[in-house]
Amino acid sequence: MKKIRVLIAKPGLDGHDRGAKVVARALRDRGFEVVYTGLHQTPEQIAATAVQEGVDAVGLSILSGSHGTLVPRVLDEIKERAGTMIPVFVGGIIPQEDIAPLKEAGVAEVFTPGTTTAQIADAISDIVKKG
Amino acid sequence: MDDLIAKALQKDSLALGRLSRILDDSEEGWERVLEELYPLGGKAHIVGVTGPPGAGKSTLVSCIVSEVRKSGRTSAVLAVDPTSPYSGGAILGDRIRMQSHATDPGVFIRSLATRGHIGGLSKSIRSLVVLLDAAGFDMIILETVGVGQEEVEIRGQAHTTIYVTVPGLGDGIQAMKAGILEIADIYLVNKADLKYANVTVKDLQTMLAMSENEKLWSPPVLTSVASEGEGVSELVVYVNDHWEHINKGGVLQEWRHWAAGQSVREVLRDAVGSGVGELMEERSEELSDDIEKVSNREVDPGSVARKWLSKVKFDV
Image (cartoon, rainbow over all chains, first blue to last red; front, side, top):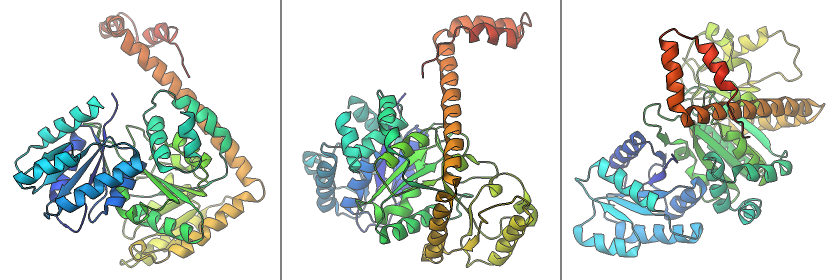
């Protein structure tokens, strides 16, 4: 079976990566190949990495409240560099009322606190398999 | 596919990323990609960086890329991390140390998982080197997984092998042992600001001095503090010197012939292995009847294997 490759990235200045690491580890244990780039990534770095690594999906972890600014910029950069859209997932502290605008902007799914890692893995693998 | 190949030859990172995936996953058409690209390569300087986990290989690779870029040359990196034997998944984290190069169009970085391959690299690394070499990168750096004593596969892949170690991992006897410590062209003691770095340097120098082989190139023992960028420009001077050295006097020609032999043998072995694997999967019920006979001591394993070997179809 083809391996699912995912990029897990933390955009912006938020320095808390425990959540991103937990998700990366859980996806590894589900048989995914997880490219992890660490903290403080710019939208350009994230998009360039997604393209070079040929990933099936990108997961962004944002706890700082800056998702409204950062996510659209990451989406734009990916669209520009990849030509098409690579599915983008967002996880972190995202207020309920911000979820719909993020999805409208093109985010495949938003995971808020309380989501299990199994749910995240299932959601990613469903969307990747749909192509 | 022709379009992808044409773009990859212009170092287009989207095309390179896509083709890397095709080659790494053996997706449909991967053989043709290699047929087209192989004749175009042979120009890049391929540098291997190996050593134990946590020695600072990724940080060092990032520093080498910076030096190479300063001199106006382009560089590609293939960084290998281990696949879990349980889930088949992997955390590919070498890039963390290299992200300052992520948006540089003269640099292409690709992470790879070993996917069960033994030897410190991935099975696909040979194919990816063909791709990046054809694309015209001046230097291709291969970072192995963190290795122990015996992962010497890098020797057949890289023109110049750097063995990175750190102080405090063992005494002079460790340095005398066979295996990975014999194969490097450059030895580097990283984290040289740590205690006993000079002892590690001495152990390596003693080991090299005991070598009785008449060598045209005597491997240097260097030091660095990669996190501070210290010692890197000296290292790159030696890397370039080694490349110059093997380009003179037919060493490179000899290496190429030897490495080509390694490639052909490995591809042949792989083809046989996957031919056998497919057959066993296709006719698993019939095979399990034979296994039952072996289990009951009616027949020995060798006789069953000989019977099945004649049914294998090889598809290279």
